Image (cartoon, rainbow, N blue to C red; front, top):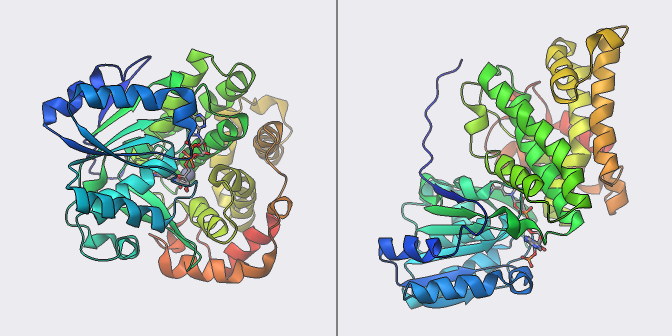
Length: 396
Ligand code: NZQ
Ligand code: ZN
């Protein structure tokens, strides 16, 4: 086991109808009075959540300001707009109601509201975050885990960059998780959410030293995602399936699944963020296309990592060693099971299907080298910029 420090100061409130009375009580007990409510393109109005939240804010005696229209792959322009409202109105709480994009933009708003300068500065250098407004979240989709981590991902269309912003000051203070709020998530976003959460756990699985406790958590989470996504797709209001997906996703991205292991450097995410920055694709879908290619590339480059692939086959997909003539056949069957699962969800077979060409692959790989949070030398199998280009080419 590797040494670690872990601090996760977010209060989680999970369960059916968990917002009613509890949201107002949490706000009142902390004395917040001026709230910026942030949300996306309107799903919360269609589902009725907007009205529920407004009633709670009224019950708490708050003055409410709103920022709507936060985009999937949230833009820095939305962050600037939110920060401007906070500064002008003296906001004392940001309440994010929506998916990862709304929560991420809101984290950046919390930081930018306390910073004299352009919010993009804080994305380029998060050490400049020295204060942030408090954040509550109401998560409406099982995907990113943003409701229980201290990071966000912001897109700058002008510079073609999609980069993380992170600070210990950005943990939400309280996050509400009502699985029934995810009933209305459309099939394509349910699928993308599953692919995203699975990727978070894979990023923590394919590391050099894997803690056996982390391994068990990750394998269970992957099995739960694989078993429950088809149920949620067939029966969108299935509470048990939606609740398992939501809770698994909440644990995926805040470091919990890596405790005792070597740190993950999120290589698949680094590559996907580059593709998203150029082509504005859905995050989870990009990850699902890239993941099997990345895994196959690592095994090819360093066959000594094979034991982890056997674990994938046996512990996640339930394959039995005795049914295969060799370890290589077992590993291949495991990888094929993963690819078949993504295909069964309707994930496109390659980036080319999304209109992507190899035109910018070299620039993407170079950008990772200079801008990602960690070095690709520390990947499960170390990767050069040429290796990144190869994985991208194979993902077309
Ligand atoms: O905008 P609205 O109208 O709310 O609709 C959204 C949006 O169109 C819809 N949606 C969400 N909840 C719904 C719903 N529709 C109906 N019913 C509901 N209950 O789904 C669409 C996608 O929403 P979005 O917030 O973009 O999805 P997601 O949660 O997958 O977030 C993706 C973003 O998070 C970043 C990604 O890169 C991407 O920008 N990530 C954030 C991370 C973090 N903070 O730790 C880690 C992740 O790896 C990821 O990078
Ligand atoms: Zn992700």
